[in-house]
Image 1 (spheres, each protein chain N blue to C red):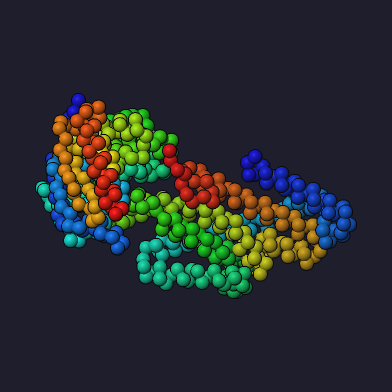
Image 2: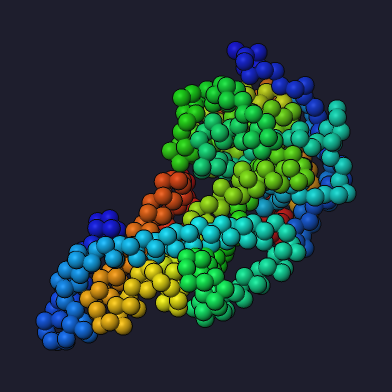
Length: 260
Length: 257
């Protein structure tokens, strides 16, 4: 079975468990609404939910784009210059020591209640995995490829640039892709945290709002849509990366297959 | 047919290579101390030595991949060997994201020149891979990949070619075919082939130097009769091979002592 199929089956099983818990425990609907009730809200309040979902998706995608660009640039800069490496790498690692969630109020203060603070949040949360994965890929270029390229390329800066563009960056793309997959998985966290701290739209905002008005079924519906969106973004990026890099080894494996 | 009269063009006039006073260390060990030898122009010279003697390091030093500040390495005609050496090793080093033709023309890309696709196509045909220009390396067998690597080496069109056990990773029949192919296509260039296989050295080399000891030195030089590629079936070759094997085995035990 393919991954999406297995995921669908697991989801169905979870829904069945959920329904069973509702039936057996007799919990009131303002604590745990039944799946059917949530499904009903999904349909009746679809316009509201979709409107908020659109905001959250925009935040996630813009954050992904910005964080990926910044992460890739940082990796290239760290790789390029010893001075940058000495100063930027500790900073990048230290930035991970600060819980990004703790920064959310500051980001909202600086960038306002709108899109910008959530994009910044998502970008910040994915910056580290993207930088580290890409840098790792750049550092582990096959030594044989580099030797070969050095016998072909002109000496000096021009040759180094050509080797970077033609050999090292393409060779690092599978590792970069792994970083991007992690980024796709965590970017929604950044966006939603940002929305919780201060916002006027988005699924995170909708959840808080519904919670405050005891519309627990709506809150669950928003959560379900958020989960579906996060999964869709992850699988879309995964499929895109596979298509762009058919030569790359399977996910989560760094060793190239032994040739025979 | 002489391939060099064909559309591939005649190679640049052969230049010999002179190596003088090469000293090479690997960590604490001295691999070579004040090593000197010549590569006669337009000839196959084979360096034969047991594994671990430092053959690969030696080739890397000549190719300029390892700095050897004290050594004198120069081409007989122009002096500096920079940009005049092509290099091929036992791993094909094909880039998995490029098809066969783009791997062959990699050098052009790295130099910022337009790739000569027509020449790449002809070279691929020459190594028996006509029609595989668009194939990705992953879809090629080990022997085919090594042929692409050979075509890539020829595409570079350098007067001096360094081969580091180029056929060690393929099976015996494939190796046999590749040796003949290399002898034919690299004829006229100054070739240095390092190998641990006495038979390979005897089939391909105009001259065969035997490396042994630590630091390694050239312990013996053989000039087998006839012109390469020689037939492995010749009794003289078989006798020489036996002698070389003995010599390598004793060199090995010296190393152990």
